[in-house]
Length: 210
Image (cartoon, rainbow, N blue to C red; front, side, top):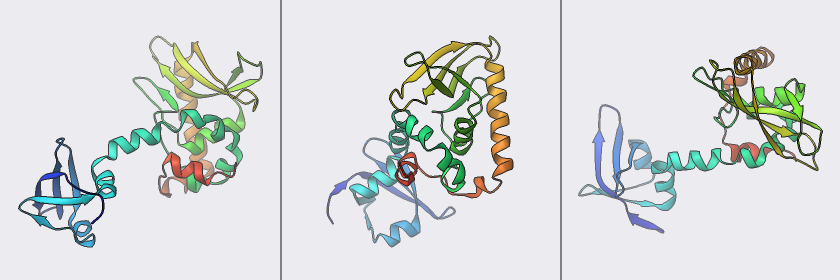
């Protein structure tokens, strides 16, 4: 087997759940279904299992993969804005939620990517871009509903600019309400949206036409 490494100190089968609890050398724990162990023809000998690098990444580094994928949003936020009409028209690729966009306070609202695209399309929450003077569209807000103030991020619509503007603004409660209503509007327009598989940002980016 190529790219093998001895990474599991213990493999404990939990028959009531039909899974193996795998523990790697760094103390990570992965719960892997028995049928996946069987389908990959993996042997557990004296409590030790050998995995390919791909299997290890898939089963043990879930959080690391999620962080790497989440990090794709900010540098590509203009691409999501640029493809807003396409995203609104294709809810099957938009059942994606992230802390990279939405309103985050003690009462937080994380819209789907489809709802964010709808916000971009409607252009209801904008400011003047401090770099070029054109419209910049809200995509993220972090603050306090109690104080009312927040740090808000806006993406400039100008293709020659594409800068992210950060403004400290009042009206955090209104921003939370806006994203809540935006979510509801999107669900009303596309009631089937939540039934689609949630894709990664990498998969969504690869699906965009531009």
